[in-house]
Image (cartoon, rainbow, N blue to C red; front, side, top):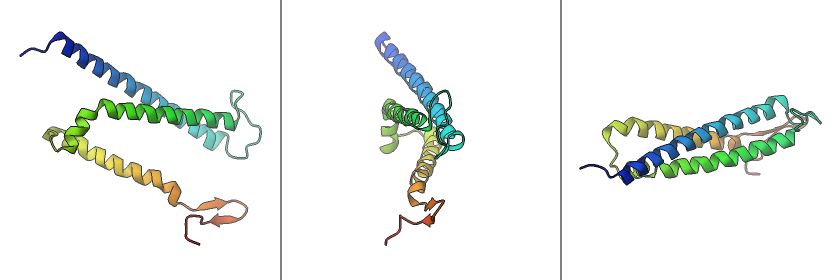
Length: 138
């Protein structure tokens, strides 16, 4: 049984959408890492009126925030484009050759959860007053 031209065109459009979303996601992530590194090391807190390309720390922080939101939206679109695969994994119908992808995905998810909650569980240090444990019961 042959695929109709409409089905082939739909598959090609879906494939192209995935490629574009992945490229944009990678670009947003790279720029996010770049601006985060700039904020951490080049324009740290209390860096005064220092500027890079006529932008202050707060301007770069805004750019970093909007890149983060863009990346989050692109990752949501990425998950939506792979919804068929996600459903097959959840229902247990994924092929045996995709088991490595599932294992890596689960490990990545666990690592992401630990990484996401690490700042919340970490103590806050004030340079002048020392370590403050805001996350403990008082």
